[in-house]
Length: 237
Image (cartoon, rainbow, N blue to C red):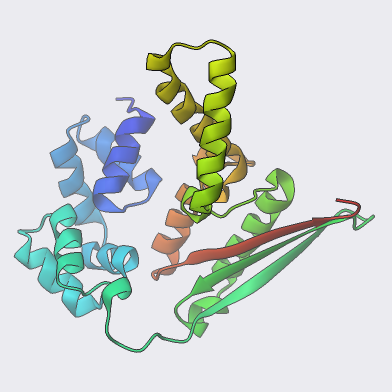
């Protein structure tokens, strides 16, 4: 059976599994979400996915999954509640590993893209798949010129200014007050898709976002990855 992209996204949010596995699971379970989750849990490493998503220790992930009655979403919440995820850890911050990938476009060398991607271990930092992923992201940055890594990285004051401008523009067009909030939301979503790397469509395959591409790399390499910074330099701009 054919499955919708929304169902795939919903299943990915519930399981942290890759898009391809989510699609396969939904097809095999005839669209039944509960059965699809069971399928993914049998086909992939649940504890590994919990570790990749939260950064918690493997032992904590095993315990949370058991205490949550083998419910992935509940296990994620338990890990956060118990302070086992990286953000709440009282352990000293580990040294960051990763690379800065540089891509210079064309023979004229008028544009360069830089990307910093962080990982947890030097083993992954030197892995060919990791370096290939970093190169793909640098190509994306050169092609699509994002201004931010994600919508969450946009400063709050800038978001507020943009909202004021959107509202003022819509009022000048005499849009009904009841519609303005919904239209503003649509304008922000369009802005995020154009200017935020993780929300952009992959220029090589528009069925995937860069966020989905990052998730696939995390699943493949087996540890958390973070696109920390991006930069584009272009002659004269």
